[in-house]
Length: 321
Image (cartoon, rainbow, N blue to C red; front, side, top):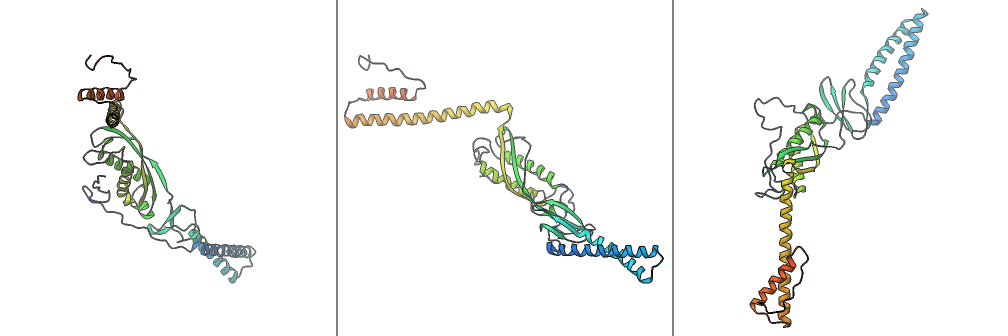
């Protein structure tokens, strides 16, 4: 399989070199399911006590029976309710196959991958990012192969998010990013290989699908690594000549198939004739001079290589009559 040099989108920019988002996934601070459940129960208890204190203080003020102690209880209850409400913003539930990127006032604090009930930094922004395996099929693309023949080609790409931080912050929209980069990689691979038969040591798209799939997967992986995406596999889903040359290429394939079939028939016929002559000589059934031997070879080859059913003709005279 011919290998070609690839340039990823994250290297050697053309023109002005912009500032890259250099961020990698890290684990965010969490209490885990047990700690989150305990904190949730404590929060409910504090909310109940705060509500009781607020209601008691309000009733005392309404009845003009409030004291310094009741006012302090009312104030503490209000503050406690605000604090508990603020702390409750740290609770989050994560389903299997999902993750959360945690930002605190714009700063990336890490990613939560642990599933279930969790507690993290209160008042933080948490964005859901799926880490499930996904797939899509590229649009059918018209491109010229290595021999210059126009072909239509499409591929299925199986992928998943490997680095949630890069997927979130390094590119604008990682789903559209991988689709556009996959189509670009598919075009590049298609132009580097002939459609039907190997040319200049390059494997063909139709005859080396496994090698082409691996090469395409590596090409796409190089292009989307900047977004923290992992390519599981790629497969060519559609491959055909463009309509304007499809008929001519079909005739070419049929002609090649006919030539191959004829070659097989001729090889078999020659072997059978040789075997027949050897058997006749070995068993001394008939003694053939060179001219009769040539005539017999000619007749046998005609019979064995003919498309239609041959009709035997009995020669009642000599060889030259």
